[in-house]
Length: 187
Image 1 (tube, rainbow, N blue to C red):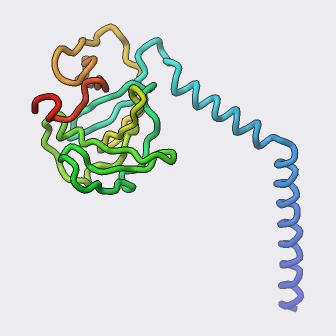
Image 2: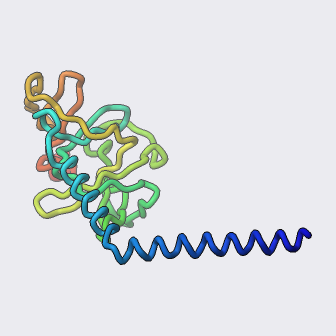
Image 3: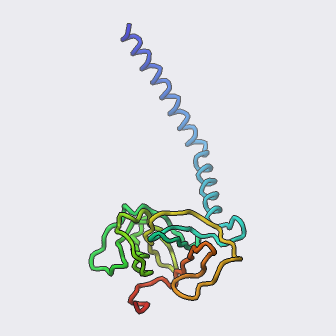
Protein backbone atom coordinates (compact mmCIF):
# COMPACT_ATOMS: atom_id res chain seq x y z
CA UNK A 1 0.00 0.00 0.00
CA UNK A 2 2.80 2.45 0.83
CA UNK A 3 4.44 1.68 -2.54
CA UNK A 4 1.20 2.57 -4.36
CA UNK A 5 0.97 5.81 -2.39
CA UNK A 6 4.60 6.58 -3.16
CA UNK A 7 3.97 6.11 -6.91
CA UNK A 8 0.87 8.32 -6.69
CA UNK A 9 2.90 11.04 -4.95
CA UNK A 10 5.58 10.85 -7.64
CA UNK A 11 2.94 11.09 -10.37
CA UNK A 12 1.40 14.17 -8.75
CA UNK A 13 4.83 15.70 -8.36
CA UNK A 14 5.62 15.11 -12.05
CA UNK A 15 2.32 16.76 -13.06
CA UNK A 16 3.04 19.81 -10.91
CA UNK A 17 6.56 20.06 -12.34
CA UNK A 18 5.21 19.83 -15.91
CA UNK A 19 2.67 22.61 -15.18
CA UNK A 20 5.38 24.83 -13.69
CA UNK A 21 7.69 24.28 -16.67
CA UNK A 22 4.86 25.07 -19.09
CA UNK A 23 4.05 28.29 -17.21
CA UNK A 24 7.72 29.34 -17.26
CA UNK A 25 7.96 28.63 -20.99
CA UNK A 26 4.78 30.67 -21.62
CA UNK A 27 6.30 33.62 -19.75
CA UNK A 28 9.46 33.39 -21.84
CA UNK A 29 7.46 33.32 -25.08
CA UNK A 30 5.09 36.06 -23.99
CA UNK A 31 7.83 38.65 -23.44
CA UNK A 32 6.46 39.52 -19.99
CA UNK A 33 9.81 38.79 -18.45
CA UNK A 34 11.66 41.30 -20.64
CA UNK A 35 8.96 43.94 -20.15
CA UNK A 36 9.01 43.48 -16.37
CA UNK A 37 12.82 43.66 -16.25
CA UNK A 38 12.85 46.83 -18.38
CA UNK A 39 10.23 48.45 -16.14
CA UNK A 40 12.22 47.57 -13.02
CA UNK A 41 15.46 48.92 -14.52
CA UNK A 42 13.74 52.18 -15.48
CA UNK A 43 12.31 52.55 -11.97
CA UNK A 44 15.72 51.99 -10.36
CA UNK A 45 17.31 54.52 -12.72
CA UNK A 46 14.68 57.12 -11.84
CA UNK A 47 15.21 56.59 -8.12
CA UNK A 48 18.98 56.97 -8.57
CA UNK A 49 18.84 60.11 -10.66
CA UNK A 50 15.82 62.14 -9.55
CA UNK A 51 15.93 64.21 -6.38
CA UNK A 52 13.03 63.20 -4.17
CA UNK A 53 12.51 66.51 -2.43
CA UNK A 54 14.32 69.02 -4.60
CA UNK A 55 17.51 68.53 -2.62
CA UNK A 56 20.95 67.28 -3.53
CA UNK A 57 20.89 63.45 -3.84
CA UNK A 58 23.85 61.82 -2.10
CA UNK A 59 24.87 58.33 -0.99
CA UNK A 60 25.81 58.47 2.70
CA UNK A 61 28.18 56.09 4.46
CA UNK A 62 30.44 55.83 7.50
CA UNK A 63 34.24 55.71 7.63
CA UNK A 64 36.15 55.64 10.92
CA UNK A 65 32.88 56.32 12.73
CA UNK A 66 32.24 59.57 10.81
CA UNK A 67 29.54 60.23 8.20
CA UNK A 68 30.47 61.09 4.63
CA UNK A 69 28.62 61.19 1.33
CA UNK A 70 29.16 61.37 -2.42
CA UNK A 71 26.91 62.66 -5.19
CA UNK A 72 24.58 59.86 -6.30
CA UNK A 73 25.36 60.61 -9.94
CA UNK A 74 29.00 59.58 -9.43
CA UNK A 75 28.14 56.15 -7.98
CA UNK A 76 28.95 53.39 -10.48
CA UNK A 77 28.24 50.41 -8.21
CA UNK A 78 28.42 49.27 -4.59
CA UNK A 79 30.18 45.95 -3.98
CA UNK A 80 31.02 43.84 -0.97
CA UNK A 81 34.49 44.54 0.46
CA UNK A 82 35.04 40.80 0.80
CA UNK A 83 36.02 40.81 -2.90
CA UNK A 84 38.93 43.19 -2.23
CA UNK A 85 42.21 41.79 -3.59
CA UNK A 86 45.56 43.24 -2.48
CA UNK A 87 47.74 45.10 -4.96
CA UNK A 88 51.48 44.70 -4.34
CA UNK A 89 53.79 47.72 -4.22
CA UNK A 90 51.05 50.34 -3.77
CA UNK A 91 50.92 53.23 -1.31
CA UNK A 92 49.15 52.79 2.04
CA UNK A 93 46.11 54.74 0.81
CA UNK A 94 45.43 52.05 -1.87
CA UNK A 95 43.85 49.05 -0.19
CA UNK A 96 43.67 46.87 -3.28
CA UNK A 97 41.26 46.31 -6.14
CA UNK A 98 37.74 44.97 -6.71
CA UNK A 99 35.85 43.78 -9.74
CA UNK A 100 32.93 46.07 -10.61
CA UNK A 101 30.87 45.20 -13.68
CA UNK A 102 33.82 43.50 -15.38
CA UNK A 103 36.23 46.36 -14.53
CA UNK A 104 39.17 46.04 -12.15
CA UNK A 105 38.94 49.12 -9.94
CA UNK A 106 41.50 50.39 -7.40
CA UNK A 107 40.10 50.89 -3.91
CA UNK A 108 41.24 53.85 -1.84
CA UNK A 109 41.38 53.98 1.94
CA UNK A 110 39.53 57.17 2.86
CA UNK A 111 40.92 56.87 6.40
CA UNK A 112 44.47 57.30 5.09
CA UNK A 113 43.49 60.02 2.61
CA UNK A 114 41.75 62.08 5.31
CA UNK A 115 44.26 61.38 8.08
CA UNK A 116 41.72 59.46 10.18
CA UNK A 117 42.56 56.76 12.65
CA UNK A 118 40.79 53.54 11.94
CA UNK A 119 40.76 49.84 12.27
CA UNK A 120 41.84 47.21 9.84
CA UNK A 121 40.35 45.75 6.73
CA UNK A 122 37.78 43.80 8.75
CA UNK A 123 36.06 47.09 9.65
CA UNK A 124 35.34 47.82 6.00
CA UNK A 125 32.13 46.20 4.75
CA UNK A 126 31.45 47.80 1.36
CA UNK A 127 33.23 49.48 -1.52
CA UNK A 128 31.49 52.42 -3.18
CA UNK A 129 32.72 52.39 -6.77
CA UNK A 130 32.69 55.88 -8.26
CA UNK A 131 33.15 57.28 -11.73
CA UNK A 132 34.66 60.76 -11.98
CA UNK A 133 36.05 62.40 -15.11
CA UNK A 134 36.22 59.06 -16.92
CA UNK A 135 38.09 57.30 -14.10
CA UNK A 136 36.68 54.61 -11.84
CA UNK A 137 37.87 54.05 -8.30
CA UNK A 138 36.42 52.69 -5.10
CA UNK A 139 36.19 54.03 -1.57
CA UNK A 140 36.20 51.44 1.18
CA UNK A 141 33.48 52.21 3.75
CA UNK A 142 32.36 50.66 7.00
CA UNK A 143 28.64 50.76 6.30
CA UNK A 144 26.18 52.32 3.91
CA UNK A 145 23.55 54.64 5.29
CA UNK A 146 21.79 54.96 1.93
CA UNK A 147 20.52 57.71 -0.30
CA UNK A 148 19.71 61.07 1.29
CA UNK A 149 18.43 64.24 -0.35
CA UNK A 150 20.22 67.14 1.33
CA UNK A 151 18.33 70.42 1.43
CA UNK A 152 20.44 73.27 0.10
CA UNK A 153 19.47 75.58 2.94
CA UNK A 154 21.59 74.79 5.95
CA UNK A 155 24.51 73.41 3.92
CA UNK A 156 27.83 75.10 4.50
CA UNK A 157 30.23 75.30 1.59
CA UNK A 158 33.48 73.61 2.57
CA UNK A 159 36.55 75.81 2.43
CA UNK A 160 39.15 73.27 3.44
CA UNK A 161 39.81 69.63 2.61
CA UNK A 162 38.29 67.39 -0.03
CA UNK A 163 34.70 68.40 0.71
CA UNK A 164 32.01 70.25 -1.20
CA UNK A 165 29.39 70.71 1.53
CA UNK A 166 28.98 70.16 5.23
CA UNK A 167 25.43 69.49 6.42
CA UNK A 168 24.12 70.76 9.78
CA UNK A 169 24.33 67.18 11.14
CA UNK A 170 28.07 67.09 10.20
CA UNK A 171 27.59 64.91 7.14
CA UNK A 172 30.50 65.84 4.86
CA UNK A 173 29.96 65.59 1.10
CA UNK A 174 33.20 64.62 -0.64
CA UNK A 175 34.52 66.57 -3.62
CA UNK A 176 35.84 63.81 -5.87
CA UNK A 177 38.08 66.23 -7.77
CA UNK A 178 39.93 67.02 -4.50
CA UNK A 179 40.40 63.43 -3.35
CA UNK A 180 43.86 62.29 -4.30
CA UNK A 181 47.08 60.80 -3.18
CA UNK A 182 48.56 62.34 -0.05
CA UNK A 183 51.84 62.90 -1.94
CA UNK A 184 49.99 64.82 -4.65
CA UNK A 185 48.42 67.04 -1.98
CA UNK A 186 51.75 67.59 -0.25
CA UNK A 187 50.97 65.11 2.54
